[in-house]
Amino acid sequence: MTRKYRQRGYMNSSSRSERSEEPPRPREETFGPRTLRMPGTHSVSRCAGCGVVLPAGTDFSGKCPSCGFELHSCKQCAYFNTSARFECTQPITARIPRKAERNECSFYAPRVTVERQTSPGSSRPDDARKAFEALFKK
Image 1 (cartoon, rainbow, N blue to C red):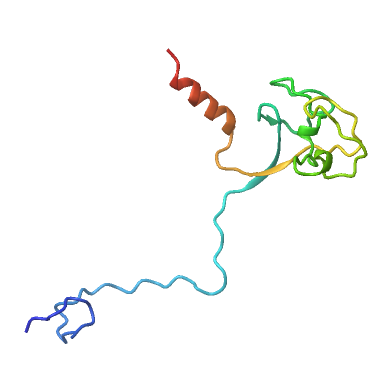
Image 2 (cartoon, rainbow, N blue to C red; image 1 turned 90 degrees about the horizontal axis):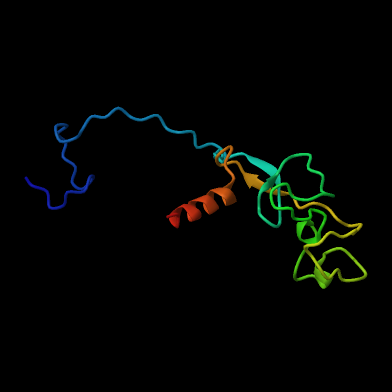
């Protein structure tokens, strides 16, 4: 007798010759939430001018070691927000006109971001820039 449909389970025959005898796989544990397999994270501070990762222990009263950008400026501050009043989330009394220049703000705190550790020793902005420049080399 031929079956009309070939799906498994439709009019199963009792003969064991058609079935493949596979050993049952052990069931994965389905108890509780799954464990996450995410890469590790680390806190870094990047220059607001060039995007290079600043080394730990950097003196934020100086300049960036690679581009010379002032590190004690509004653009490098954690409270800098272009949509806030005077472009700062802290209660300052007067607007600081030049955001990229050095200032003596008492609320200054360096911006620190949490990034994933995808590949150790790789700095993404430099890699992308080098790849772009390599496209147009003669």
